[in-house]
Amino acid sequence: MQETGIGRSGYTGLIDMSKTRIEFNEPFYGHEEAENLSKYMLESRDFTKDVQGMLGDITGAGRIFLTGSASSAMEIYLASGLLPADSEVIIPSFTYPAAANVVLSAGLKPVFADIERDTLVINVDDVKNKITARTSCIMPVHYGGASVDMDELMKLAAESDIRIIEDAALSMNAYYKGSHLGTLGDAGVISFHRTKNVSGEGGGALLIRDIGNSHVFEEMLESGTDRKAFLRGETMAYSWQRPGRGVNISPLSAAVLSAQLAKLNEIAGGRKRIWEQYHDELSGLARAGSVKLPVIPEFNENNHHVFHIVFTDNIAREKARTRLLGDGISAVIHYMPLHSSPYGRKLGYKPGDCPVSEEMAGRMLRLPMHMHLSEEDVALVCRAVRRALEG
Image (cartoon, rainbow, N blue to C red; front, side):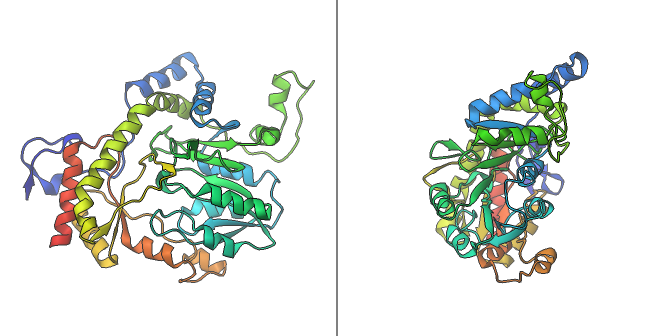
């Protein structure tokens, strides 16, 4: 089978589809990132403060701490002692295992809740059912920039005196009613992994709303010492104050991230264009009932991190995935529910405990989504999906 050229994949004219490759994800790096790395390596230019300032302007967070990853940012908060030992943290079953791992490593218990069918974010009604006297925290995941109804969730948390830590790892430049995701709860985390919209080849951020507790996280990131206070002249010497973690962001990551944040508007516009083309070209299949397309709530300004389609069943999903892979197009499934995983079963869960999570894991497929995709690339992917369902 032959098709016409597909832009970034490097082919022009008629091409052999068996040799075509459209990657699922590629970072959007250029001369700016290379120049910043050169400045760091050759001139010892540290971009960490630049990144903190840029993130502060974008997110409006009360205080920002840069870490090695979103997981380490979450670990810092959970290990701070602000949550009672052995208490419970409610998280969606449909998320990456790192979310449960940091809960366990802090000596807390993860409690899995189900998700919404349309947006794939945590189901607030199920959260209500999972709250007990031991619940200290709710950790909603804003899936691919799609937001939980934070007003509803924060009202529920306030009624039970429960903290909210937003997992906004996928949600850089996504907003809820004008507020950046990760800044509405008590704390939030963002990821700058190379698969994210804005990448530092690693890195993360802890966003704190109540700056009254910020000294705790500052000390934890300084190996548990008050070294930063000493450098500011606030103490005669610095000493060990609490258990700490060596999980600060790498200056190499900060150099890359500074360049990425400088072109945030370009990235946002490009991803929106790609997302909307997918939506337009696949809308016929949605009208026919063959697939369901992503839903963006009215209260949510999305960052277009992901474009997923939900098939009628697992058989149709696998047929499409196999067709796309055969055509050299990398399309992938996402999370397998934590509650039904081998370790989830060790925690006492069983299949059926979070039925929507299981259903979506078996029916959804994520399409390639990155800045190097051309209009021809997206059109080719959509044609492959249509043909898989027709054949």
